[in-house]
Length: 169
Image (cartoon, rainbow, N blue to C red; front, top):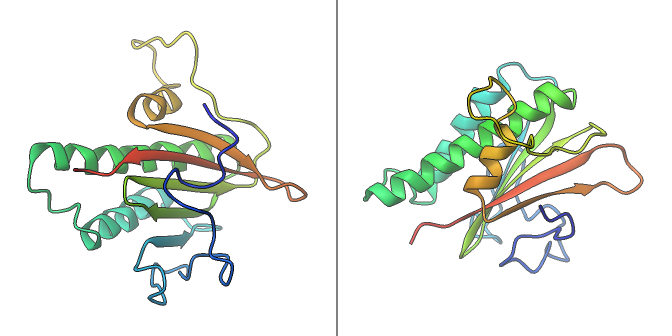
């Protein structure tokens, strides 16, 4: 796990003129980012896991990942949906619920970010026991992602848990 990379591997950070990448909470953008960032507010919402998956599925459609033209592209999209489910579920179970989901599309990777107000750090259960119920979420994230980590908000409570998956070729 890396905790020191605040931006996607192929991203130079936020645009100096617009700290949120030009996207509003409904997933619309102002055109400056070529629709590369999607945001979904989740604070106080019910059914956040299916809502986050539906939101992500629509972004993948808009970005051309779905419908998938090959089995590899379909698997890549399914991995993204699974990781979103795991990160949002962890925020529900261990951090009082997610505040926001962010999707950042880069040329080589897709970065998922879940913001929550929790103080704990997610970690894969070690040793991993495949036969035991529960505790598999971060193990799945670790296995499917190029990298993942946690960013603390500095003076504000909470954190952003991020994960990066390779863009389909």
